[in-house]
Length: 234
Image 1: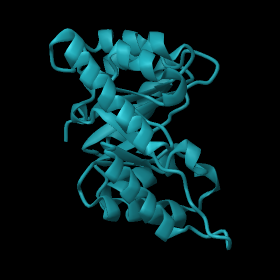
Image 2 (image 1 turned 90 degrees about the horizontal axis):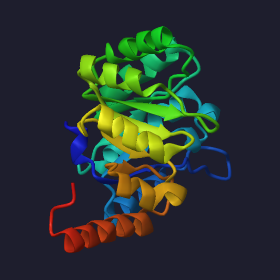
Image 3 (image 1 turned 135 degrees about the vertical axis):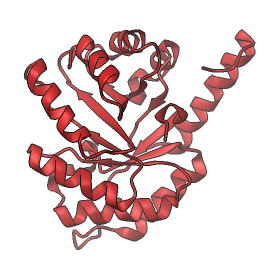
Image 4 (image 1 turned 90 degrees about the vertical axis):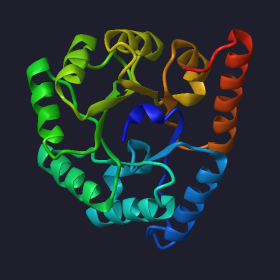
């Protein structure tokens, strides 16, 4: 699929647990249905905000399987394959592809250009329909923009980029410009970055909740954009 069709809210699902500290599948399915009814355009599961490193491998797989089943092909499901080691990343990516995930997301720690490129090419080697890289740096600017542009040109499956850096807004614009607007760009910090991100032209936001309110806000922004400018929202 073409990630550029995902324009709106891609929700990152939190992990519900029962009082017995087990995955609450009924609540998870209900949350998926609520998000679909609200108009989300995709799911990421599991994400860093979903207690990722506290889940067992079996819980990660089952959670993803439940979301794929409940979504039923109505919107894409992105499998969150971030892990502590490259071996685990590859294993999860392959398993999530097998479950029917439309895309794979990984957060790869950046040390230098060579290391980062090797790790990205390795995960791209499992041949996901599309690869989303998460650029997460709560106190810095993250991965260099020229490297992202290079990887976008050279790696066919790398078609989506989630930005969570400081300052995020500047990087939204730089990445969009460096890739000619052809790389799907999503913001992770919807509450604090929402209007600025849309003004800068990003395609999606990826919050962990408030499906209905944020989806409504996105639709309202698009409507106002078209009314004021007399053109279709990009």
